[in-house]
Image (tube, rainbow, N blue to C red; front, top):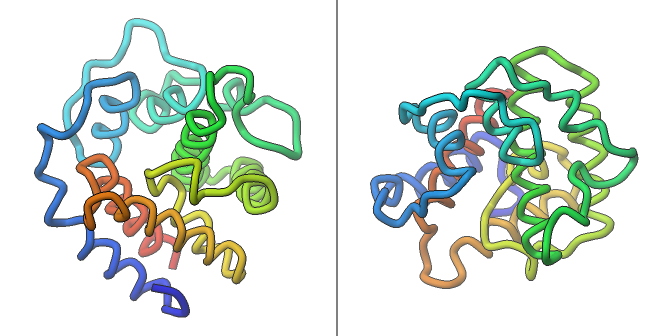
Length: 192
């Protein structure tokens, strides 16, 4: 899908994803699924008694729970990844989590007009382009829009690889990846 306008990317992502967003049975219950689907698909979710303020899960909760202290979650050293590598058992799980976190933080930075958060998103995006390989690290297209909207050939290639990975196993995205693509499509449209 390279060398296309952001609008065409948005349309293409929606066309790829839309047929698969109804496959809720494929979605596995997990810490991230509830807040992600609440933020992206409008699925009702019960807020936890105490705000979740760690990792990618906390940032997705922040999209639906205004009690979450986003600054506390992203307070790690810069430049570098958003989430500490040591919190995750494998590099693949950590890469997936970090990309999920910057996906959520992109939306939060826009909602709250926080240029400092958007700057952090850009720093983490650039760090990943230099230091991680999406072709082996994740099959989820987290933050695809973050890379695509950067407008550089390296970032566009990263975005293309994220898209390819989510289609590689079965020729279609799984249900979670479909919703991620829908959200990325919305982000691309919103940013223009």
